[in-house]
Length: 277
Image (cartoon, rainbow, N blue to C red; front, side, top):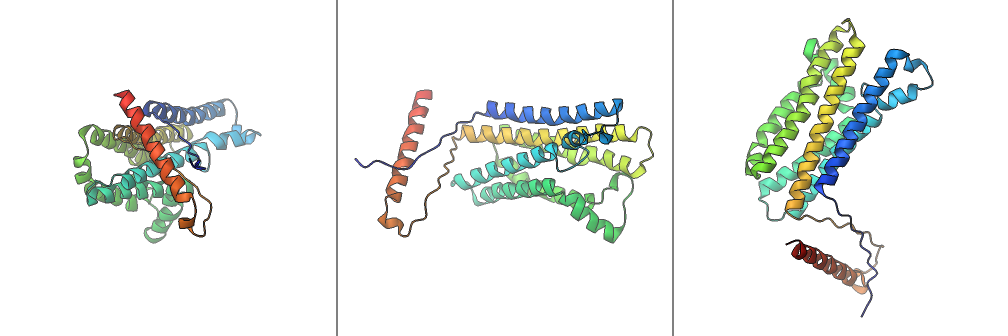
């Protein structure tokens, strides 16, 4: 019997475990923001050697822990959508396109969050052509993103309707929570930024930023958890295999090893499924 050189690494994840990790990350980011801002009431932390701790945890700034976690969660959500799109061959073409659209959109949102595209690029371009905004539209990137969100929401209505009710409800809930922070609370933050002379301005901005970022992270966490439930119910699996470069695969044992490993993996899943039943 020929021994296979193919080595499989198996990682089993449960939705409850994923939910616990996501909740912990949201709590970590929110608590860090609260702690550094509470410390700032006792002394000016930005004028001490601990300014790096402030910059690392505050949600008022970018390129730090909260930004990293938000960008990472968006990317993970996009990867899960891509796996669903690629593995559900029985889907109708529209649904496949919808899943791929979610994957691409979330990947772009991850890039946007990390690179500050909406504020640093889109907002600056719009301000250059139309001037600075006022009130709730002080952040000019709203002019581009609000119509885009409305159009995408309209286009995805048929897709949401075709999902099982338990998942369409969770997906809509995730979107509502995320947009409540990304657009709703940020309207208030935009207004505060436009007047700047409000009493306790720094405190109000710190609070609104906390609520905004927490809602955004919570919305993505709900979405990832919902995707994990979806994938668990329909028994998704994902294999990751790296092989050496082969001049002529037909003259190697690669194909035999791959088939053998795949069959062994399928047999293992089938055995587990029968035991669970």
